[in-house]
Length: 212
Image 1 (cartoon, one colour):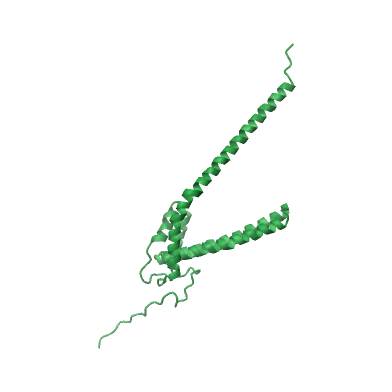
Image 2 (tube, rainbow, N blue to C red):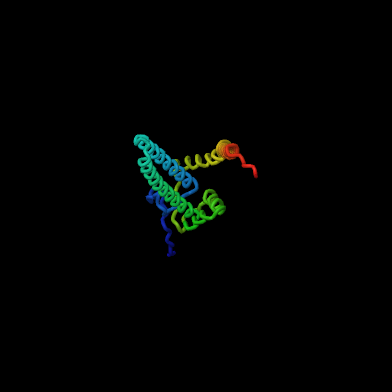
């Protein structure tokens, strides 16, 4: 009679293990990571723009008084701070899950605090292949079809964004800087002209007394 070794049952997909994307426990594949990042970014702006519009409308109804505007400005800043902190938290959670997928600790995300290194590490998180099978952070997470679609949309938006900034945003910023410099130069010349004119008028009004 031969002794049989025990084989553990196969791992269940994320739909059966009740995976929660907003929890730091678990893993994110590349497309899942991109898809949820895109969803959180869109949600952030969908909430932010109506809030800013509402606060702007209240400011207009208040008659634009300085006290009311200051109060509304502080309220808007507080709302924006809460939204931004929530967005940063979700982004960190997604990064931790992506780090788990390539079998490294979430503490590696501290590299984002180091200039230049953060860019390299960010690209590594985007393109590194996850561990095949279970690793020390759990089983691989199945990527849903909608996550695949949004993930590829995010990838397509990257070169589009680069082209947009190169064609429109950068020239517009350069034009703004040039116009600002021209305005400052004109103001400087105007101040110098005013000073010279004032000096001339003073000299004319009070001529120098000849020495006796």
